[in-house]
Image (cartoon, rainbow, N blue to C red):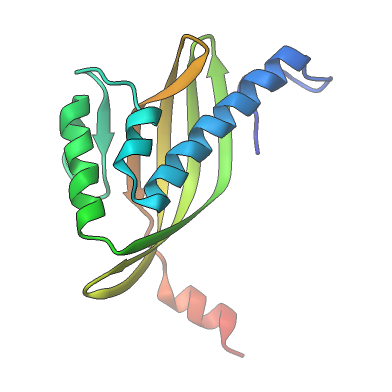
Length: 155
């Protein structure tokens, strides 16, 4: 995982590593809430303010915690199960703000069947009372060139 603003070369101070670990945990908690289809866990990872934002793949901007919570409720209601693996994560911390950029490897199971895909995500966090809380989630689908997959996997 890239630590971005942690400095150039040299050892990372212990307090900075503790900050990064806490942020990694907050990001992981978000994806675990998503994978568990748990509104209660989503409630714990988001800041409950009217100005927070969320952009699901293919959706318009949702502003405010009540609307964002409702969007997760709709997603969870229409999904039987979800598996998410986060890869290529990088972290940037500046004071009480942090950015996590990552790739979401998603498989969801619905009444219509299994859907898998990749999304690039940006998660913005704000530290409040020693807790990192999500203030913005933006995921965009990644186009996969099937011909490259086909050429790379078939001999």
